[in-house]
Image 1: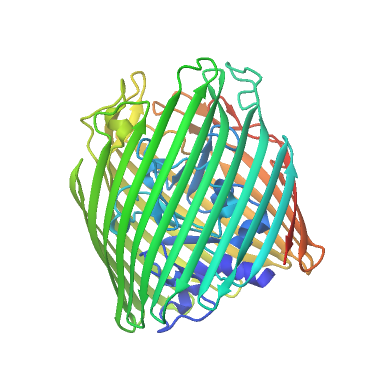
Image 2: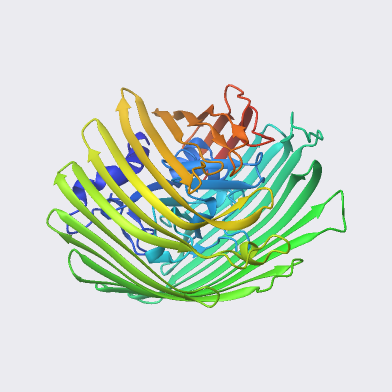
Length: 599
């Protein structure tokens, strides 16, 4: 197990010496998010990280946030525990500047703009691919800071059934079932079912609005998938995801609750030959969230986001080492509910072309995209990157790209606070990096500079959004190495996120660091982790200071038999009293136990 997990963890770094091979080897890690076609991770000229199902199980992650919180350039802001509003900032950009995909399909909110990362549980996630830096020339709006692709499709369909049961502090329990396998020689399928519940804790303890309430959370989830191969070149894929979530939250000292139903249906036809891979996909997504204020039962608020999308993607490899891809995107999104918007729907049409070429020790990556949106007009984005393999174990790369994000329905039309005069946010980002893979250590260092024009920020006291320019400069370093029986993963980051007023962007620290040390034995493994986030401000005017913090986590797994495993985990190992948001207390020390049986 040790070699397998470490190989995956090091993959984006280790593959650099293989990146210019004419054919990818079977042990290379393949990614699909960078350019919307499958390619070796080592060929991607961007900072990319991959988290596999095995790694998720190793640390016993419960949520998407727990899957990605140790990755370089990632900062997390939680308004309490599980189920509470959660934001993720990549390289100092806004949380809404991160494009979030579910199996390649956009799931950002049409009203709020970003994605609430408290949603999808880790139990239904097979893999996460995270790219830092702009990707709008591939995906269009929102991809200013980066892209997170949540993948629920298994990496392989070897027949396997898994049953999981778990308990923990604060009344936590979990039950899950996962089945993957062949139905016949041309058809494979997958079913994952998950349910979780927790009583929660008092997220307002010690604040001026401490009511003594506990804020609970529960979720029920289903993922189903069917793939059929009609011939050697023709196939079809069908998938469905359903999430039924319930969470309690605080509103001015009052205990309220939100009920949320999310579903996504996808159908895809695929043609794949040696020279051409073509896919036509239709997806339907709906997020229905209703809030029930207990202090005012009549003031129910409902927000419904609906999105229908068509994607036609074509990837062509005319000669070895040169890949050309082109596609068309159509998206119709609308909002509904108790809030009346001046404009409640919009259609976006787009076309893009991307190419990757390898010539001896050089690799070139270029993309261009045109978006036509009925609300904010036309937008052109592009990106260009060049990599140079200096030696067998070292490579340098540089990139420049543009991106944009349109104002959300809330930004423009929310009653009492919308600003219909807002302009789309536009960015220009550059990155220079060096990667090395040596006998004792693999490492990566990246320098980046992002200029965001017309960033949308809500300033007090009116809290009406306005356009303000921002500049974000930073450096990231991460490394993987071994000392004896311990495998290490280290990440260090420094960013200077400022707006044109010279103020530090809210809820973003300048300094971040994380470390994980893992031991893999014959029958058991353990991981000790540390996360550091520096001081920051909770408001855009820099009046409300939040101190930095260091938090430790510990996880261990023991294989009783080849099929039966027991696991335990402690979060906030030393019971650190800290907050990631003003007046929102973070989780105290908490324990989890679980057992899994595979057959």
